[in-house]
Image 1 (spheres, rainbow, N blue to C red):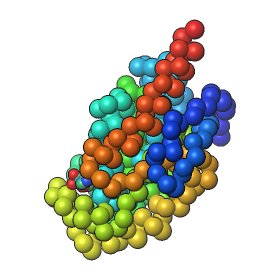
Image 2: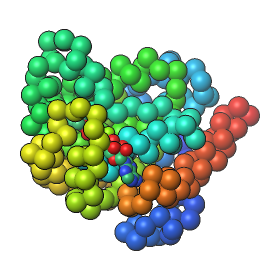
Image 3: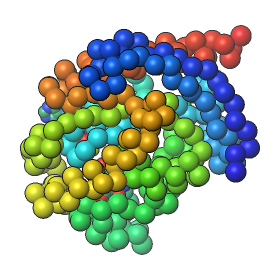
Image 4: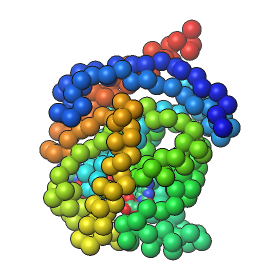
Length: 249
Ligand code: ADP
Ligand code: C5P
Ligand code: MG
């Protein structure tokens, strides 16, 4: 399947000792690019940067932990393009497409939409963007999502940002969201929490074992959480500049 495997570099995330008690030690993060036929297309679309393939960070966490809120802040500060899998599915749901009804039924029950569909929406969004830096929020939600992404898009995440939050806070945030979402009610939230621990946590664990997870506590105000996240992306920005300099020399 893979045409080529190119090891690019590695970088050390700065002062991760301050980033929570679970993943204390700072570690080297191997970053590499996997080239497949499909990702070659993506390469052609990446005009904005000398880096050939997109930099991808997955942002994971239970419902209401603040993934969307923090992704907005990260995008504004560090120039990433924010792609929320849930938002893409909701857009598809309301577009009267043939899959809309099925997506709506699955979301209403808190279940996971077939991976091919979600990955196709992500792929279209990545390809139609001029950006080379993406925050993919709420994806992969299960191992099947992850495998489909690897097969179709063929790019490994730079790292996985895991927003960790107690369940009672998640429930309170979801119920207070007030955006008219059909799944922001107590019954569906309970189901989504089950799906989170049964299907989403194993994916986080998969990346943890690969040394790719950065866990951040989602407790505190939006500003406080963002200040805990900031060093990860500052470190990445320095790394990106160095890589781009190397490529332009
Ligand atoms: P997610 O994308 O993880 O489901 P959101 O970013 O949509 O979560 O946040 C869920 C709700 O919680 C929103 O109403 C948001 O304004 C609120 N929220 C997000 N972060 C915080 C925070 N740190 N403290 C209090 N409320 C928050
Ligand atoms: O991330 P968000 O809370 O917006 O997701 C809402 C719903 O969208 C999920 O509960 C699930 O039904 C669906 N979804 C999915 N696959 C994803 C992301 C979201 O099926 N990768
Ligand atoms: Mg969200």
